[in-house]
Length: 188
Image (cartoon, rainbow, N blue to C red):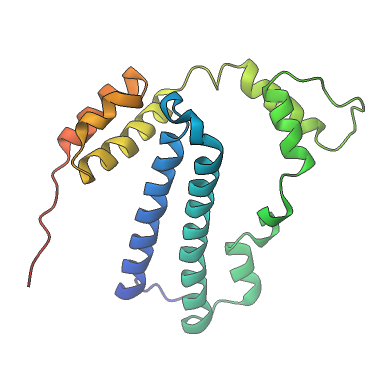
């Protein structure tokens, strides 16, 4: 296959969509904070699905380009799109999703060890039991701080970082925000 760069208009569209998805992800994190608890169910689901849909749009633009302008086979394109992993959220949470949450929250295990979702239950238990939920690792803290710092810098509201974030994330987010220069937009 010939190696060619992504066409510039497509590259710009993908960058725009990824940026939008990242800001939606930052909103998801924001709405998990206790100060915004009154709205967390609605807003985390809205923003998480907005991020997912936006990344789906980016994937479909790239796939459409590949389909129309390259010699990629439909089978290869389907494998790149990982269509076997696709699950429609319109169907709602699966049994495995419910079992994973049950495991995370310490609810009783499904009675049958071969029941659907048993592995998901064990995954949830391991996730909670290993402290992965309670003690965030450095990579997760840094990712959260970068997202919050970026949003604070873009909105020119660094003081918002102190109002609802855990102190360790707020400190790092402030450093990130302070390190970022706001680009001057070209005017014509």
